[in-house]
Structures are given as C-alpha cells and as structure tokens.
Image 1 (tube, rainbow, N blue to C red):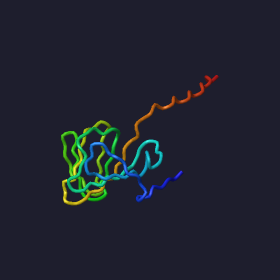
Image 2: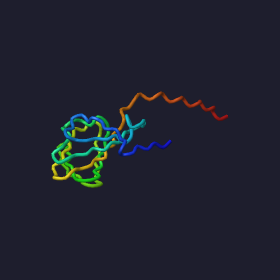
Image 3: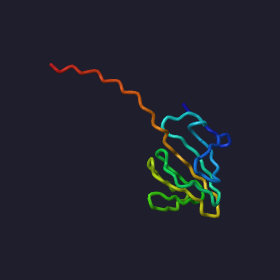
Image 4: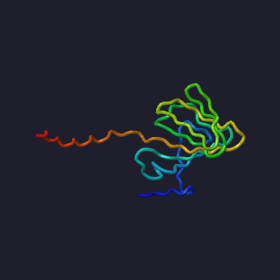
Amino acid sequence: MMRVTRHAQAPGYVAPAHHGVATARLQGHEAGPTERFWVGLSYYLPGDGADESPAAEETVYVVLAGTLVVQAEGREEEIGPLDSVHLAKGTVRRVDNRSARPATLLVIIGNRHQAAAPLPEAPAREASK
C-alpha cells in the first residue's frame, strides 16, 4: 500500500512545550496510520524553540534548511542542513533557533509501543529415529 500526503494538505498538530513553532504531520496519526513511527515537519522562526523536555519515544531530527541548536545530556550542538540527531526515549532535550533565518526540521518519532500479541508456538519437531 502507498499513501501520499501532499505538503499543502498535511494537517498541523500541537507539539507540547514548543513556542512559536509551526508544525505539519506528513505521515502517522491524523495524516494516516503508520505502525512504528510518525513523521512531521517543524518550522522554527528566529527565536522559536522547544523547551527542555524528555523525548516521549525514540526520535530522529534532520535539519532540511537553516540551523538549530540542540541541547541534550549536557551537550550543545548546532546542526545545519542534512545534519541529523538521534535521541533515545527519555532523553531530555531542548531545540532553539538562535539564527536570524528560519529553519525547517524533519522529525521522525517512534509510535508508543503497544503490547504485542504473543507469537504462536512453533510445532514440536519429532525426535529423529
């Protein structure tokens, strides 16, 4: 199955602890079902950011345009176009646009794990005779 979300029709969503950041959901949740992750775009104007908070699930950021400063685990890194950051679930992070230009961030976040159905037991093999 292939599902296309056109940028112009991508639904916006509210990102907790973000201030002044515009968002669009490209895949997952209200943009259509996905199993293991969802994908969004975040648009950071100069001075915009995401306050310090733990990553709810495993997260990957990829800067598509501009630069952003990501802080986590006592480190601070400026990331630019096509730079990426991986954050393990629970990592406390902060994101800021300290530049004078807008920045666009591709966001990939794992879906919350649901209890998996138990796997069927394999049939017992007969002992060789």
